[in-house]
Image (cartoon, rainbow, N blue to C red; front, side, top):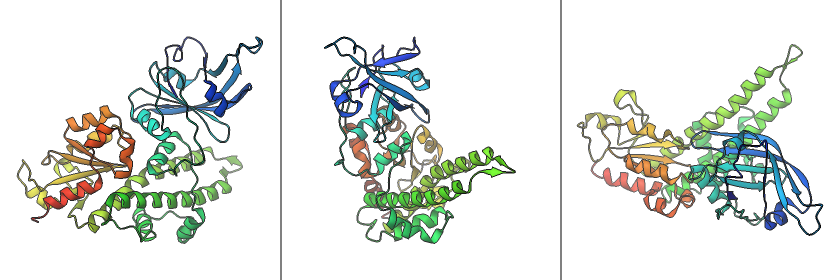
Length: 391
């Protein structure tokens, strides 16, 4: 990775070159001229991200001059290179299938911080620094898989056979999210929310995500084998509709799954709460404490025992939505699974009297200052328990 220089980010020509280091050539680019298939990725803030598939050529610009090698990586102008600017961070990685990934994240963005944490390396100016990823790296955890999914990189499930046995009952039909979440909890009986709510939440989410992936693979494979044809013509609209339904199901399922497991943890810990309670102007906080009737009976300035918790698997810029969901509660709480949210974003949250709650295993993706401010789920439950002693 490296910070992009002004020359790297110039848009004056249709083709560009960057200079790799000796370590990069030894580790993954090779010592001979080669053209790689390449995936260019732009990761802007919020939902502003896109990809472009092309190529990149690694070659010696002074091959004809003995002893004067000057290796370059030559790549075409495209939507991603048009979006990048001086100071942004370029992450260049080679997938085991030979594809080069050319990933650009804006300086100071959440995406940049997430990738620093994922790859375990930070740039040191405008020269490339590199790190070889070995087969002995720790297993991917939830936060790492979250970032890889944002990049569009699929990952393998190590316990595929065991998972297939669990989901056999569903055949090729998706169950309700509540049913699936409950099954995830029942099939890991050794996990107890009372012992460690943060670990329990992540374990349940991990297990359910793996179950969902296996069931989705089975259902999608069967649909693809059936094909998309009708009246002797290719059913393009049918394919697009099916593809969109797959993507939408992935996005909506995680949010519902998070709420189901949070509710189970609150119940197990004896925390009085109400899901989807109605407050002012028809707003519906994900979780209201202790309940809707207590909230509406409270004076306009509220009561110390009142609290609310929003639950969003990803924050992006949507964290501001929870600020208006309960006017009688000054300090709002928001739980998210998103790793490495940028410091400017968390500073804004604190300024708006919003306390971010992040499961403990994800804290490592935040910097030291942020970790000192973050709450984990156990801390939130302890605070709710303290407030509800008199109830």
